[in-house]
Image 1 (spheres, rainbow, N blue to C red):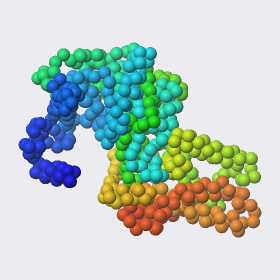
Image 2 (image 1 turned 30 degrees about the vertical axis):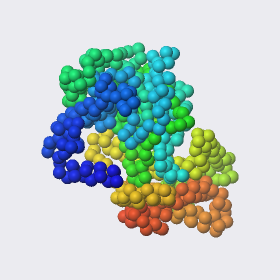
Image 3 (image 1 turned 60 degrees about the vertical axis):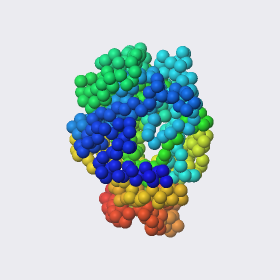
Image 4 (image 1 turned 180 degrees about the vertical axis):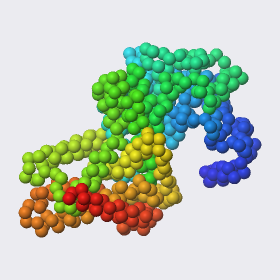
Length: 536
């Protein structure tokens, strides 16, 4: 009832464009005018709680609580999340300047009140604190269905690989659940980059109340959208770093390059919990943005393979490169998704025969890679069912978000305008939740990102039927010739079962749209014709 009442009031405010005085008792919205939009408005800073004055019902001191909305202008760059974080960094420096900063996403919440104490155990340790830049907790999620059909847990990124990084210079920053040493944002451990004003320095201590006029005036100044025009170190040498859509990965990477170390803290009780996307298009859209941002780092002047290796050493440089070059996996995945299939359809073998000694090498590499991957996943607390969906999603990402991220980055590099393909699922929350709980893929929209995987799903069963037909009718060793191709095709077909269901069997709103299915059939036919000339 309270939620519905709040929802009604919010809708009334949006419709009328005015905030009633009863709601605005704290004066937060007094600057709201008819020109006030999410992309164009002045700075708003409001002290909601002041620790020197506020007490709870038991008489204990309350912490400072400050509302901030940075100034935005239609003509000024926003730098997205990194810009907002740098504004928070400056405003908090002017008003309180706490030496420890917690960065956490808005959709996550604390699950353990001892989490700050765990972080402070490291950040206060005299043996390591001089070079400790941040303490990273793994991302954990509530509401993941039993088999995690979209592999949103990202166990390797948030758990397995972070544990490995912890044996070197420490894990990367993953965007949330991270306690930073404020000093880390102002140069390396032995190379302090002085800010433009003393009040922004990491060791500055305010002697005035946070509601003092000069404090509030300076806080409004440093929150202005044009403030960084005159102080170009922000986002380059100080603060969260600009230059990539994945500002969390890039910032952690640059801090490690400057000489800072990090700690991976993974207690049994989750420190924070967040929500997971429940539609495939939301998952792929998010990871397409990651792909573009990772490539921006990989092919920048701070490339992980050159600058990273020179700054951090070979192992850390290669570890960061593993992520930075993620989107390039779309190339081999596309080859394995289409080449063996077209070869079977045209009666050509691209792998060694089963009697060839090289065939054993292929089998060893495939079984060894998947066996090690399964072992790592299960030892990290995963299940076989979740591992299967995780490797399935890896292939889906390769033919969708990785591929389109690579294309969009390439076009952007060539200064060619791109279409973002940013579509939103049209299915309401209740339907989405039911499908997710029943472990059914929600396609829902006619996104171009679904076309490559749908095309592969069309080609593979045709190739499998053709290959099996040849296996039972050809007397000259057809099974031996096409053994590896049939293994690859069969593996892809089994992984594509949710796609076949969405294309043929399902009638709900989460099915694969007919337009995508028809386009996939046309594209498959075109590839077959091209294959004729390629294999001729």
